[in-house]
Image 1 (cartoon, rainbow, N blue to C red):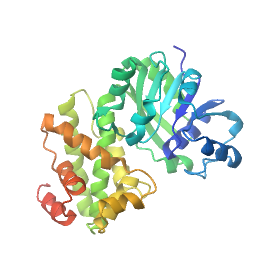
Image 2 (spheres, rainbow, N blue to C red; image 1 turned 90 degrees about the vertical axis):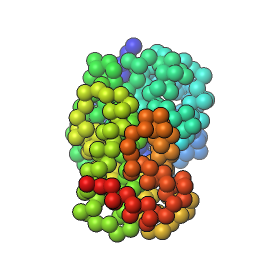
Image 3 (spheres, one colour; image 1 turned 45 degrees about the horizontal axis):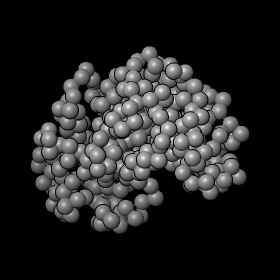
Length: 331
């Protein structure tokens, strides 16, 4: 396998756009798959993504655009998937090209809906991609700050540390540093849970809970995250590492966090449906809450924060009542 070879971005949203900026800082050119040909034409005319992170300017001569997912896979060696998790299944269903000889990097911060499967497990089970040819990217790293070239950090995880060490060079530049890990499963679940907890942080913010409470809330959230991840599969990990705790903190506090924004709207009195309609982007924690709640029916980990959010989002319980009860469980 040639690494990194020709790199393809799979997706046209804000995170895919930020990743394209990163990759083009170290590579001469990229392939870029976007579902809609009209968006591609707009991109070529404007020199930037017409809908997401429009401040990032691109030299489109260095980008080979595709609206055919099978063709871009055939023409590429490393595939970086950065589509929102609720839509990943419908995109992957279009794939007829074998993936066993490709290297796949998942930048998707969610689970496969209905299947309640990690993205990496989905590729292994349904597309026969070897586990040594699959990696994940973890934060803390908001697309908007990549656009501003503010110093950021990534963690890349893969079972084959030599392969991911080679690929890590693609994601290093003057404003981006990274580390490598083997904790693929833990990082994937952490990236789902941090969105869940960011929604709760937003709800509490919308209800006028202060910084003192948010600090206590996040202390309890990181403990809950550790309990769940350890129950799924205990490996050597430091939950205080930036890919776990750091990603949780930035998602819970940042003004760029769509999950926090979504939660803040609910805390201010918006219904879940109206908050979703008002959002310009997907709050993946909404879907992650249901997936993790269903997974935890098997593991039965003590997860009062997750259960509280599930009650608000899916059982239509009063946020005021649920959050007040939740506060009694914190230490």
